[in-house]
Length: 67
Image (cartoon, rainbow, N blue to C red; front, top):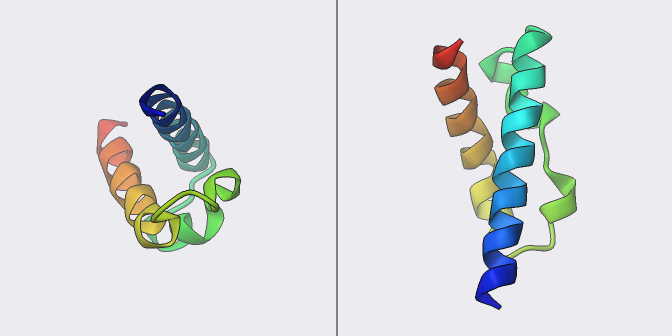
């Protein structure tokens, strides 16, 4: 349903944000981030294989410049 999709999307991006911030605090760099953050709990979602690495990379660069 639309409500569950919205809820899952919020959960995904909140977890992604939290994990990337933790990685930045640990000094992880861009070359390592997509290997480190997999978001495995969402691997059965549509388009995970296509979008997850891109989401991780883009979020990393956005949050990196925020720091």
